[in-house]
Amino acid sequence: MRNFHSSDKYTYAIYIKSQSGDGAPFASLSRFDGTTIYFNNYDVETFFRPKVTPGFFICTIYYLTIPTSKSDSIIVQLSQNTFHKNVPDLPYKLPSGAVGDRDGQANNFGNYPMGLHNITINKYKSGIHTLSYDSIYLGWGATKSHTINW
Image 1 (tube, helix red, strand yellow):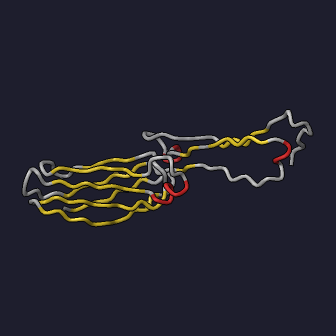
Image 2 (cartoon, rainbow, N blue to C red; image 1 turned 30 degrees about the vertical axis):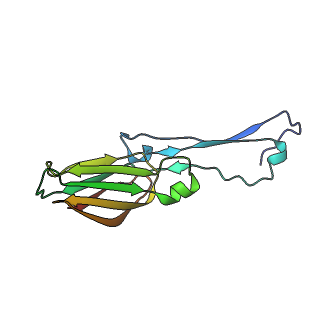
Image 3 (cartoon, rainbow, N blue to C red; image 1 turned 60 degrees about the horizontal axis):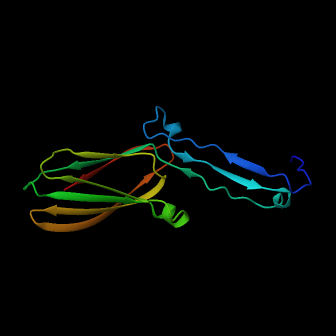
């Protein structure tokens, strides 16, 4: 351990570098929000818990459609509730969707917090609404796809 100056006029910092890039050329450059913690000589015995946010690289949601009407639609929402519990002031829901006049539509997400994402699926087909649930785990630097049938 390094020696800290005894004067309280000195401040020290622990710095964890941030990396991010929704379109990063390598998955290792996917989201990792770093942090800086400042402390003085009185805090050197303190145990610090730096808050960092690792994220997945990209997730693609594919919609397999057999539309019976152009008004058919699907609304999908991914939510990372553990991230929301730990960092309640930041967004944690990712909305997406598709409409019936497009086959094979897909939505891409990237640079969001890793972890278990709960999926809520609202389908509207021939005037009938159905609600279903699913989930997907997206690890740090992960590239995954998920298909939803409607």
